Length: 433
Image (cartoon, rainbow, N blue to C red; front, side, top):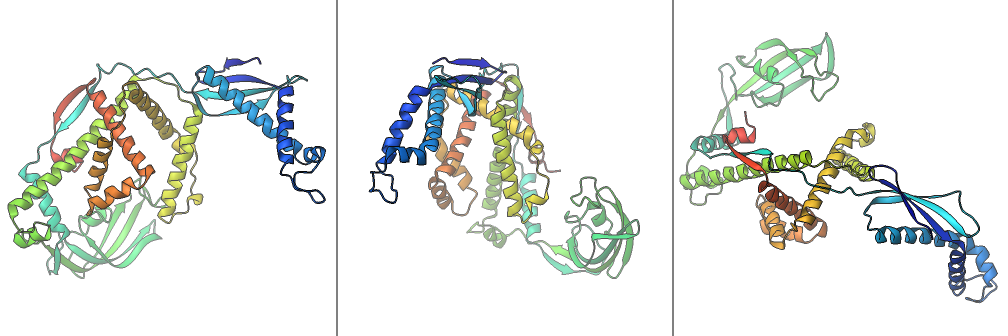
């Protein structure tokens, strides 16, 4: 049996397969005999249907099954013998060279690339270094107080943070537009519910006042029909309420979970929460830079079949996400091109990470997997229940294992790369302006 592997491209290969017709026919006859033992046909006892009739009934299908099995087996045996790692599934095609002795086929497929991790020693990444200070704690406390604010009517002109009730109508080039008018709308000035220019224009108005002003919708506004356009609004202000923030006292501390109402414990708890959030963000920043560095120093070709599989997965996830929000995905133009770059990034990175894990024995331990799950569970009210939920599903456990593996790769890379500490404030780290 002659075997020939042809290189068609960087990763594409073709294998010629010849299947002996004599051996094939022998297997067909063998399967027909087995079928005859169980074949039922009116007028014959079970197992007594003549072979010729069984062959007429099932021969074509049996021959096709035997041929498919033989081609697949020959392909698997050959790539195993040659130690070839096949990506995806091969495409089998009959060749015109078949004769009385052999059926000839070709199998076209892609292989996994050889991966050599590049030099990381010349790469630099920044590690944010943040210290939680009293101002951060006070700012967080104020934010919590605003979330629990009560509002009382006032008779003065409006200012930022006031809650107002308004009627408004808007036009673009003199014409009404969808969503451009409403009555008894309540909003907090400066809260960001409306476009900033709209909210800012409400400052200084009194109850019963009318005001006309222009607002430019941003180019990236979610409503495409008004994005980038100038709208003229007529607003009537009907009610003004100012926020009354709760006092930071023992009752407030108890409300936030400090059972004895100790203010110092409240501050310490907030500091711990902020430090935990900072640690998560620092870890994410380092991980992001590590992954990009690995991609930058490691040049590899990627099997198209893997990219296409990832595109299909990303498209399905996007459709599921849209439908979960009540949006008909079929009405949107979700084409493969929209997901191609992300799919290629994910496949490349996945191959690189897998190679590092394999080469350097970075397999995640049960303790590391448990730590990942506990870290996720910590943000829930009932952590133990969340932990049990993860361990009840092999799929969820696999997700936790993948995160632990990524952590191992990050730690391995940090030993090879130059890490430069950079002092930042908490707000800078969290992207708060």
